[in-house]
Length: 455
Ligand SMILES: *Cc1c(COP(=O)(O)O)cnc(C)c1O
Image (cartoon, rainbow, N blue to C red; front, side, top):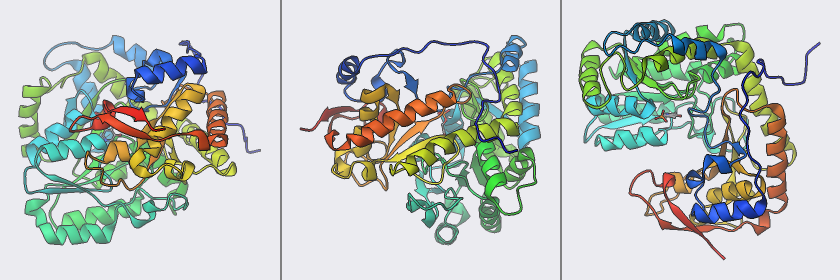
């Protein structure tokens, strides 16, 4: 018998209460936060789907490992355990700890990229693109054509556009391309996986042009599981084996351990290039910390090492991806516009389809995410015009609202609640109004922007 009920493959040992609020309270909270959900206090959120980053519930083993943290400044035992686990997983020689993913990016681009260069990626994550451009290089997104169609069920919308990559490589050459990146899964493009076939082809192009290939590996395990499920010929392989092949195609990676290492803080950059590693370590010492802790405590290194061993558990990955798919399938059945197919870590509502009466420059994604908060105290995040448009309001390709699932935190009944609230907003969608921006920062404006609701 094939069991249809999705169950969490863990039981709960410690609980944390969450707080109900009334609609009137939430309306006031939204006013005070200038209609920016980043500015709402977490206590005022019932179900927090702002991000899956750093929000994982750690296991008993991880908490136990933290007691073994060696807090020595240099050469801590915890560093060597962390290094061994990362090396066994990735095969990369040089493992440099950082306090989170963007620190890894800053150090990699700070050393390898500069003015006049371009860095192609399937889609740069927001901090990745910003760090790349802070070095002077141009961050170039080359997602596959299939990714533009929100409702097609093409299984690997995280693929890179190979023809476009070949063009960019031919035009710029290895002197102007310090690296090619692939983000797995493609967070900004909907948590969609890249196929092994596509990664192999990118690696071939990179190798022929003598350009290093780096993975933005934040969700490598979710990507590997989706390959196992969907890519012809991969169904019988173990996820760890697929993950190792993904890393074997690359010359290095950046990683936010706050995703698929199941911890609340941490990251690393890894590479096969000894010279590059030396330069990165020098910069690390300047801005993050000594080479064997890189801005983390010894206990954090232990938690990451254990988390990386746990994340490739196939019962866990099966449950996680089934739970996301459950929500997406129900939304599709209700006729609610949602990015398909279900990705690895989040549900992405299509705000332009959901709120066609709000033009993109009035921020339909922002309007939808605040409406969902007002209705049910659920916090999501806009991934669209606010995040990717600039003060010149060049049009972002899509307006999505991301509901990201913290790992091992919410249960299936929380998912049913989310569905109920989104359905209610859908029923009353014509009442939802657009916004204008009254304050914005010059970079990464979505974190601090203030909004005024239009009449
Ligand atoms: C989260 C994330 C990052 C940045 O990591 P932080 O730990 O938040 O600094 C980079 N790339 C992708 C794809 C991410 O999801």
